[in-house]
Image (cartoon, rainbow, N blue to C red; front, top):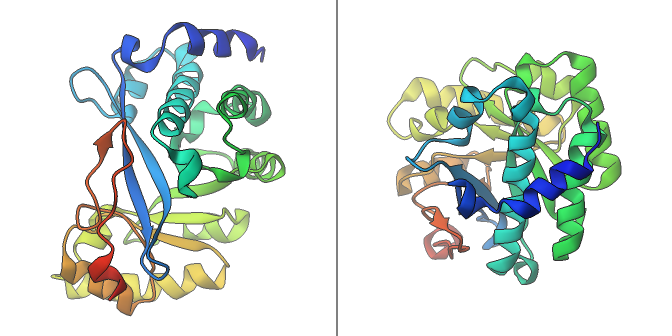
Length: 253
């Protein structure tokens, strides 16, 4: 794949001109009272999610779309002060769009270098990773690891779907489904699922990120499970083109 035209398109058509916007939501480390990473959240003109936009595209446009979103996220994050924050940048990517991992990654890293962001501060969150053949998953993780970025599997849920793949291919992080996390304060069954799932992930040596942390009871439950990387409205809402300061006072208490 010739990646140079992708970079040129990134430079010709910045995100605001394409109708896309990017917001950032922190993932807080409540043990260290700091921001571990900011996740880039892409939206379309009418509020469409990146996944919805991706699904509407022709096949040949899908890889380019993810690359443009990643480039825009990097540029806006660095303009908003990511470089001096010490936090990483998590960029969601549709796993099936990656194709040749090295060719997909290089234009994104080129933009990162242009803005002064080192690859080690990037995290690529693979959405739809369960649909990829194992050899493709292994290659993506290997290419990322050698180049510097971390890899996260996104969407581990109540049925433990994807846990076997985590054990086989060992990404750096696992993001739990928000539907599982948000219910643990009110649902005994979901609480038991997460209580069982958390040590299994830790035994693999992977970091756990809990999304859907929308109230204090959920945050307290997560703390009791030893989960320290959290994201949700209780921590901070997404903010367009700025890096919001999370509420860590109660989390650190």
